[in-house]
Length: 215
Image (cartoon, rainbow, N blue to C red; front, side, top):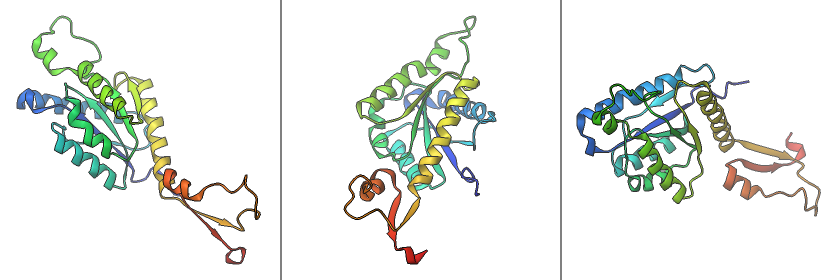
């Protein structure tokens, strides 16, 4: 049997905005790359999570979601708001994404550095603010998603993401499934009829009937 995870991946999107300036955004990139590296260190993940460039404006967000839809190797996307990322920028992108979405609510630091914390640190690490903003708009738009809360080095966080990644792969496989029914159901029977049109619309699976002589 072919490995269903072979060649599959999940894209990791980090939300921010240009307001923070190049120095802060460089740190955002470095820390989001580290989060992805921490997640990929898990033995449970069926494939690697791929880091994608920081998303800072409405056009880039929408483009990234459309590209994720178009890439057959991408089974889902993870979103994390490292800083505050105004959620109205995400409306078109959230509406556009047609693949499973996971909202990761995390921080770059596992614990607050109480001895050294200052305004620069507070300005850089705003996931507590940004993730709530993102959570609001996703809820407002009625978008189904998986929510995982915790640090990327924690086993329970990695486990939940791994389970979601496997489920997302199953969803992708189902969307490409072609199902052949031989002989079909008994004439005039209602309970076994099903709805092949709705199955293809909602699940992506193509269901068609073939005669027994075609076996």
